[in-house]
Amino acid sequence: MIVMKFGGTSVQDSQAIDRAATIVKGRLAQKPVVIVSAMAKVTDQLLTMARAAGNGDRKTALRLSRGLRERHYETAGELLGTALHTEFHTILGEDFEALDELLRGIVAVGELTPRTTDHVAAFGEMLSSKVVNAAFAARDLNSFHVDSRKCIVTDSAHMRAAPLVEETNDRLKSNVLPLVQNGRVPVMGGFIGSTKAGVTTTIGRGGSDYSAAIVGAGLNAERIEIWTDVDGMMTTDPGICPDAHRIKTISFDEAAELAYFGAKVLHPATVLPAIQKNIPVFVLNSRNPVCEGTRIAARVPHCRNPFKAIAAKKRITIIDVAAPRMLLAHGFLRAIFEAFDRHRIAVDVVSTSEVSVSLTVDSNESIPALAADLAKLADVKYEGRKAIVCLVGENLRETPGIAARVFGELSDVKIRMISQGASEINLTFVIEEDEVPGVIQRLHKVFFTDLDQEIFA
Ligand code: ASP
Ligand code: MG
Image (cartoon, rainbow, N blue to C red; front, top):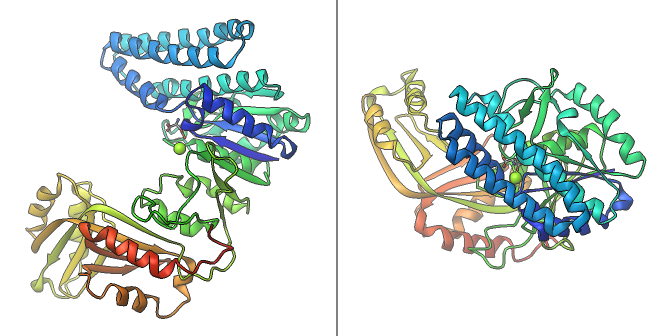
């Protein structure tokens, strides 16, 4: 058994859903369970209409709902023959009536709670999974729609509910497994679940990957496939280095380090339940299904290259806090971090000396206020237009001399901060933002010219 998850762009319109059907057809021998996101942008639109309703703006809420209705009808119309479409139209119609009624209810009460938000947000995956199921059935896929709310059991922390593993696994075994054993293709929505009492919940934005991992782990899948619209993870941003290579296989820890750098692909934390059970996760491209994508696994073969990827994050500000008077005073770092906490600013890289601390944050408009606050403790300077560059790879842990080689290559570049995280699989440094393309191109050329063919494509 395998789990195939199609993200929002992979079910965004009738062509995308048609492509998904063809991809699933090619995998029938492996007994797929299919999980789908809402069609692209639908969750955002649902949340916007829920907020509009909560603010008493009934007109906007219902207008947005009408737009959604038209898009789903149109997509279904393009995917299904006339007879099928008439029948399906009625089914979808009931859902849209329920959505409108819910929106009117929110307007009447004049309040939008997290619990009601989940009720509205869940329509995205409910609708997409029904459309995809109907399209699959019309393409002889022997599919079967499963209401995820009957399988994924969660706590009641609405909008970011946590799955209850044992209950969920029991439900998956009784509601999904028999379908697979009978040669059917279950189609279910990601992102949504319900409490033990049956109240609809959602498991956090982008949660469909998490749903795929939960289902795959619960049913002991052989593999989990995350179908997106890129070929997989790359050695670096192809926008900067056109000769960037696809990473064929990467460890979970390495992928997690890269996630921070906006590797838009997927946030590895969401597939942890699968990795913990040693189930490999593949990132694949629904527009280029012959590409083998990237395999993420707990353990991966040794790589001859010293690291797997180079990533950069721009729009960084360095904040330098220097306090000679605080020399050796305890509580100094705490006071600094409390200031960041008060301003709700997250710190990324930190380096310290006896009398000063440098920290990086994403550039944002709250920094002057934070700096004013910090100035009560020490001398403060801040400077924007910086970038974090990060080299990631398990080999960094064992191979001596890599830092010397990296910084040797960059001997003419002004390095503002250096840090090697506790995981020892990243080497991070901060440079001027406009140096990013040059630095990345140089490092990529030096470290990725002679490639380990097992690891890179
Ligand atoms: N539709 C949900 C979202 O946009 C879940 C997902 O797509 O993963 O956050
Ligand atoms: Mg996603």
